[in-house]
Length: 440
Image (cartoon, rainbow, N blue to C red; front, top):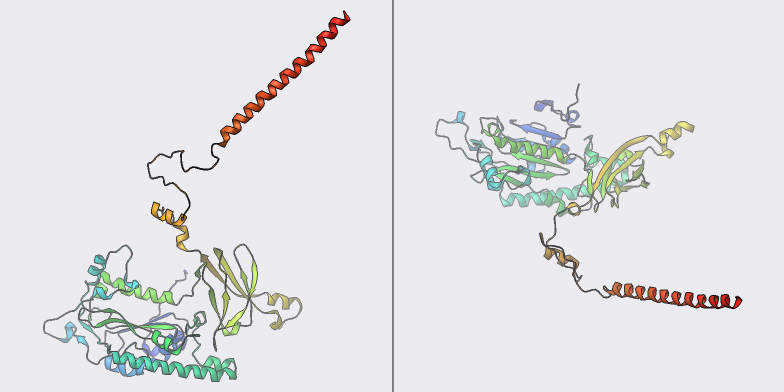
């Protein structure tokens, strides 16, 4: 059977556990009435780098979700939710419906752009769906200020725990943060060398899109190494008709973008440095770098934090493919003799990196006269426009006509040589004739 690139699992909330999440890169919770007991588990999942999308709809209860999923910023909701929703679905009222729309001007994130589509095309696309009901999100500045302060306090406590646990060995260090996500070691935490305030500000929620009534449609928040995206309306037809319009491409691009964020980076520029995360179990391995052309060199593991290790690949000045290979260290092998040597060279993993130069180096756009003169500076040049004949005359150059004098001098020297030779032959012939007459 052909193995699918993306495997989708449909689970009821009570079926979700660590074993089901340990290899997942994206979790979607849509139309679920309450978070039940999943808040702590999903929070750990996101902190390790997982991507989480929460959508309203169905039997979604904003009051219960807020009490169990917000937790003053320590839960899984990007922002607190208000108890009363916006609007009503057709089944809930017999009065005239008052649908609302998306505000295209609020969708400024690059994820909402469609290739070869103009701004007018995008506006028409995103104005098409009708929304009948949505959950109201609290965006008061006081909430953001309180969240920033709470995140700073949480980061301060986390760092103190990491320092106190550093003296108790790797096990204590590892317990400071969850480490059960199987692919989580590929993601490096960006807050290793950053200030507490910088880390907290990066985790501030952002409203990515709004409705025509000014209420938030999409809210995103960074938590640890992962992201949480909240969709304030549902994905079923009772709450809106989004999935019946072409604007559903919005959700497609959001989900694809979240999946891409979980993939390790493998493309770099020639002016960058590659940093590859190393699992705690592999930090004592032997690492080798093979540059384009087959040149090998050893790499060494750097400690980035209490529980983070990485190898750094520098001087990526040559375009091409670089290979980083991890081998079992010879000194830790438990085998002897030839078996010891074979295990020492056993490959643990191999990563290939693609390095390319700046795009402007391959830009073949012709330069204009002004730009060319600006780059050449004081150099003496003559610009030949398109269709203008190329003339031989140009700026005067010292000695450019000297070849004429050299040619004339050569001709004069040749004539002198012929004259001297002729006279020499005439003088030799005269004595010879006199000797002949005397012998007679």
